[in-house]
Length: 153
Image 1 (cartoon, rainbow, N blue to C red):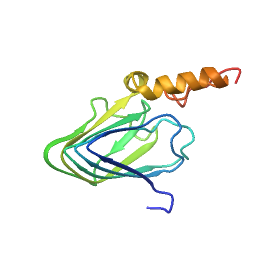
Image 2 (image 1 turned 90 degrees about the vertical axis):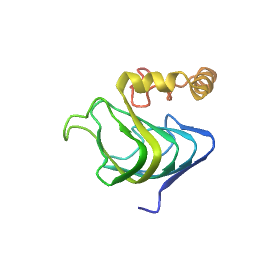
Image 3 (image 1 turned 45 degrees about the vertical axis):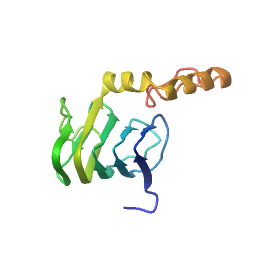
């Protein structure tokens, strides 16, 4: 882990990190009986592999990623029920690689890609707050699709 590790604590709560929330490629998630939504589609995250270190118990971690993202779960220990739910596998070596490490106990990781990721971000309070801010400031909305180009801005 580098010195710029982004830490996401979640204990008995819901934590959403959407839009341009970090510029780090190292993320540490500690969750206990919680739900965590992490948006990894931002162009502000530098190029290269993203490493997510998990310490989760009875929690759900939802990753919002691009369609061509490769999720590597080789170093992730899963104990009890649950696991990694990724129904559409990323194209081999075509997009960004996300390495999952650490341990998840009686919980699951859900990988949402493309349009499903957009819908997951769209139906949140954070989107409403971002849309109001964008309207007030005359800037683009970043929560729905942080990687989208906004013409004329």
